[in-house]
Amino acid sequence: SQQLSEFGRTLTSSCTDGDHPKVLITGGLGQLGVGLAKLLRERFGKNNVILSDIRKPPNHVYHDGPFIFSDILDFKNLREIVVNNNISWLVHYSAVLSAVGEDNVALAKEVNITGLHNILDIATEHGLRVFVPSTIGAFGPSSPRDPTPELCVQRPRTIYGVSKVHAELMGEYYHHRFGLDFRCLRYPGIISADSQPGGGTTDYAVQIFHAAVKTGHFECNLSNNTRLPMMYIDDCVRATVDFLEAPADTLISRTYNINAMSFTPQELTQEIKKVLPDLKVTYNVDPVRQAIADSWPMALEDSAARRDWGWKHEYDLPELVQTMLSHITLGNQ
Ligand code: AKB
Image (cartoon, rainbow, N blue to C red; front, top):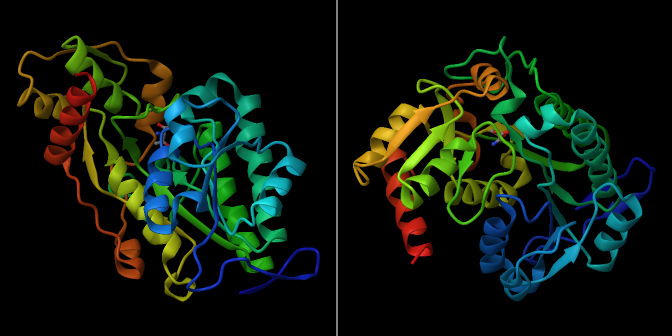
């Protein structure tokens, strides 16, 4: 595909229909990168998917496929990686999440805004397809909450949310202005067994499973009736790959909501107790996290994703609980 860059040159994307794309994943050692790389490698071949991060990964990551150092704040380093590896798709997972962002606004600004600018400029310069996740955190107290439509007031009160609204708008602007193939999904809280989230408001919904199996006791930092949208990681990575593969002409929009299930800590506890009846959950509410959660959607309205590129979730609360507990129990044996 031909694209006109901001520099006025005509660029040819290195991905043509029928070819396997060459994918770079930034922030690859966060909650989602390894799972996404696994699915993409099954589809496109092990060596066509490069995981990157600024940390040293556990040994198995080196064995599973290519892993390299990449710092999204270093424009030249990023450009070098894209050129040397003939990258055609960029999945940008580096981000500072909601709770940690409130503790370190300067870092969140740098990673989530300056880093995003580097990604968009390099993707435009080289005609890449670029995926940037957005989140339920891109909404705020004045947004409709149940369900939250695709298009509505977005006035988040966290630096994470502000940076994600910025990412949505900048990506869409680059798409219209320079022809950038920008794609963005608003993720709910993602729940995974093998990887840990880092500093989010929805983290409790991962930690409770590990505590339930290991100690039988969990102290929850959100109140028992806090309802938030959540999704099992397999649904999340499948949605991401399906959306990345969707032909451009089927996409009416460049930013879509995706939804699966919604529950409160109390409802999650009840479901886990069907398997582990001795689980004891106590509440010690963190006011920062609680205020964030109270400003977020309870459910996302996602009919556009279902209509335009066939999104369909597979995991509801009972399947999620069964799957998480069996993964964690097996992993501990
Ligand atoms: C967070 O809680 O910050 C993230 C998110 C919902 O984007 N998991």
